[in-house]
Structures are given as C-alpha cells and as structure tokens.
Length: 302
Image 1 (cartoon, helix red, strand yellow):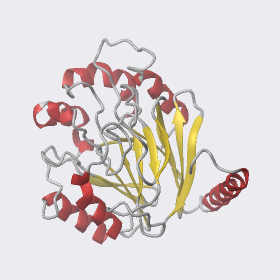
Image 2: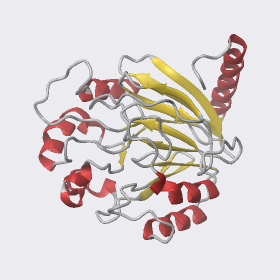
Image 3: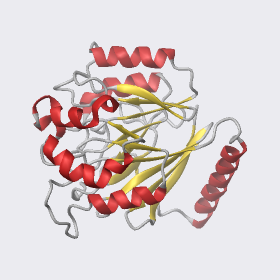
Image 4: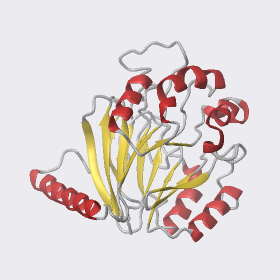
C-alpha cells in the first residue's frame, strides 16, 4: 500500500490487482463491480474565490464527474462554514448538485454548527436519513454499506446508544459477504484533528460484523491504514481498514507525524477516494483533482 514499494513488491501487487479485476469481470453476469467515489470536507461559502490551497470544490466536482461513479459517498463537512441552507443552495448545489441521483451523505461537525444540522437535513432530504438520527444503510452492488453519525455529542455513539443498537441489528440481519461503512470522524488519523475514540463502539460492532473498511473525512487530507482493531492492533484477517478522504476542496490541513499503521498519506493535494466494489473484494485509489493516481491498493472480503 505504501507508494515507496520495492520493484518486486510493486510487481506482486500489480499481479494481485490484475487477478482481482479479472475475477470481478468474470462475475459481471451476476454482480457487476460498482464504481464509488468517497469524499468529504468540500464546499467553501458562496462567493469565495479559489486559491492554490483553498476552495477547489468545483474543480474536484469536475473530476468526480469525469470518473462517472455509480455512487458518491459524501463524508461530512460538505458545506462551510456552518452548514447553512443558503450556502448549500448557492455553493454546494452549484458544483455538486449534479450528483443528487447517486449520493449517499453523512453529516460532519460543521453541519451541526447550524442547530440540529437543519441546513444539511433540509438540503439532502430523505437521502440523509431521519433528522434526529442521520444513520441508515444501503446497497452498493453486492455490498452492504452502513452510513453512521459520528457527531456523538448530538447523536450518541456509546455502547448502549440507540445508534449502536440499531447498527447491531442492521448487521445481524445482513446477508452480504462484503460490508463497509462511512462516517465523518475517523477513528485513526495522522491529520491535525487526530484520533476520535468516541467512535470505538461503532468500530467494534462493525468488526464483529465483518466489515472491510470505514471511510471518513474531518482531516483535510488523504490517508489509508492497514486493517486494525479498535485498539490499534494490526489484524490482517479481522481488522478494518480506515480511509480518510477529506480533501474535497475546502482547504488543506498539514498532517502531524504519521501514526502507527498508516500506509499512505497525502496532505497537499485535493482529491478523492475511488473504490471499485467487486463480488469478493475491492480496489481503491486516491485520485488527485488532475486525475493522477496518488496511492492504490486492494482488499478481499472475508
């Protein structure tokens, strides 16, 4: 997963990727791979002008359109500064409204700077889930995806909370082999905000349910981790991979020293996480706004 692979390691990774793509292609008759883009921390307020390191939400949106995803996962802090409905209507909608037929949003902390995140829930409507919850699940091809609310001071995330009880039941009745999740605050991050232990109960339930990865935003960078448990222990067979995809256009956050188990970190490029979800696994890439691939890897469903 690290970009600084040895030539042999890079060759072996390439062979594995080719094998996975071939396997996914062979399964097209029963379950075609789903192309997903995941990104958060996006739109400046209306009227702000793009600079070298701020307000590239329109440029990133154009890159997403060129990628032609089947689904767009929006990882929170979608409209700055306070998730106001007026700015959603004027700024976010002007650049990202074209994706309304494929988006799956979750709220970030900036959305809750407006009481009850009313601007967010008013703009996204039914696709955001119930306004007092903000969590729901959906399908992406053969995958089961859980969208959760990591604003734990507004919608509780502790072990006895309604959200965790709902998640436990949702995973209990799930019949899909492949499971993933999206929420705003990453459990693991080398970015300026760092770790968010309040989401550990969500992570624990997902690991019990066999989830492969979690996508978050919050830190304005791109970072991928090795599969690990809620205690930061690498678990290749039973851990969850954390993706941070918070470079959607608002600004950059310079990262702190890279934390344990981080396998790829970019903190000075705008871009998105691209996922190809196949019948038995997934490919991932961090794609810059100019279309170049910054990091890439793959994983299998257990």
